[in-house]
Image (tube, rainbow, N blue to C red; front, side, top):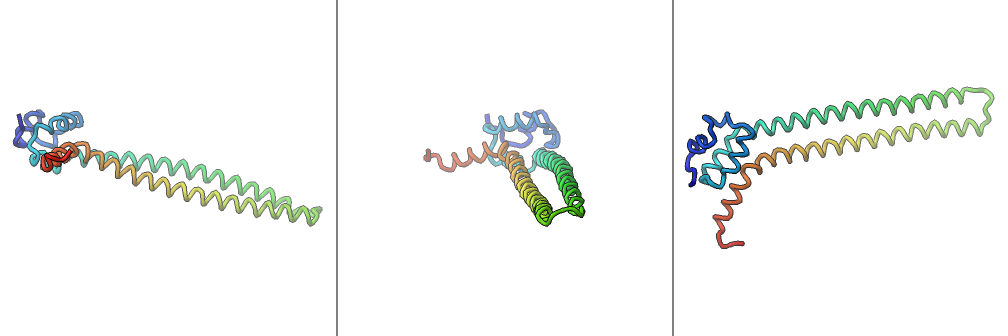
Length: 169
């Protein structure tokens, strides 16, 4: 039996409007797709608010995870910068001593420069981490939205393609 109209599909799902489509009914809707008129199914998918909600919820979760990671990263970076500042303070105090040989001064100055170089390298590493984090967040967002579309629309599109090319294997 093919469901020919939106009203027949809503009745089969036990809902009055598409706004009443819960997550569990989305699964049922997807399972029913092979029994639906293809054009009607595509029209329904295009107007379902549940997919908008799913995408918004996925983006909100992603935003919260991203924000939490950034806070944790900032705290970690602050500790690293504080540690390097402490090391530089110690080295500066040593350099202020009057009884240092020129060799000791040169060694302390090199150590002081090395801490600066290491801190710059750590900062660059952190920027690459944040860039990678943004890239992953962008990919995850796209995947979440794509998954919501594919979840429901995939079967319909696949079936439409099979009907358009019945002789292809």
